[in-house]
Length: 341
Ligand code: PHE
Image (cartoon, rainbow, N blue to C red; front, side, top):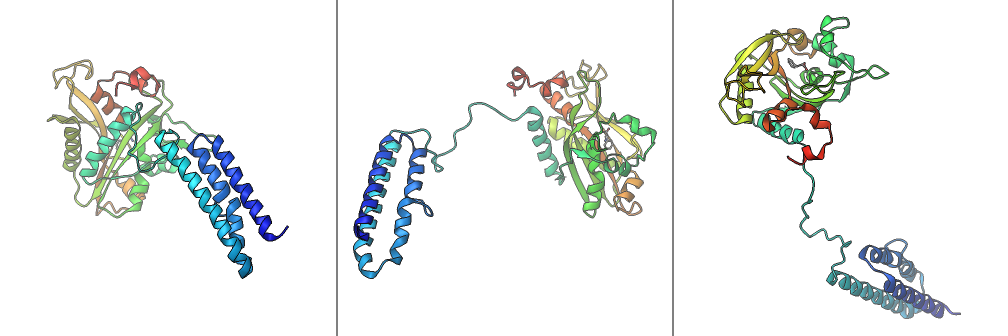
């Protein structure tokens, strides 16, 4: 059999195969596969024959070249026809990237994520940068650099989980303070929204897994007034109402003095209700001016710079925003709860 006849029979067999495959083909995915099998750029059956053309003699090329091209055009027409047929019959599996996206009928962000994004937006407008914490960190960052050396009694304030190789699922987002202080020169303005873990008995107000938004602010001549103004501005923007505030002494080894920031209850406007324990006040944000030792360990000169930090409970904000009474609902996976948001 001459080259001519041999090739002719190969082309014929390709055409026949394509025709019979297309008859059985019922969706566009399958069609794409058939197309790739015969016309694929590297290994397509017909492509391989096309690649032979340059190696033929001039005479052979004159006769065989057009034959191969004819087959190629035939196949292209067959594929096109089939594609059109599918398009007009609206075959679902066809993915058309030019169509506008379909909105999923079901699903939305978790209420904690929704409120977290909202809080991030407010802080970003105030000039804060967002830093993500490590969810598992070491003793150095969770305690040492926060002025809580080994054996310090204040370690008892955090019921910490430990991994077998001595790492800690972070008990507070303060674990990022040292890295933030080291990473940029003041002025520093950063928030750290993150998930924290504690070895706690759970009840309506306590969870083993919860969220905090840490804040770190360092510059020259920063005073307590800057701390109070920052927190009040955030909370008034968040709750969209004028608030009264007060501070109360507290204790954390990494701030001096340690403070608790309270606002007038956003539910009863200070008159007294179950949410505020009938006191009219919500104890909301532990905070304080950053301890000089913490600045020093972060490579910041406490003679020149000062700053403040806070660790706000995000779950609490979400609970106040949506009047949720039990923190355990957040991780319950209860759809009747989640579908309300
Ligand atoms: N890290 C503290 C906690 O989780 C909160 C805090 C942060 C207090 C920053 C003061 C300053 O208990």
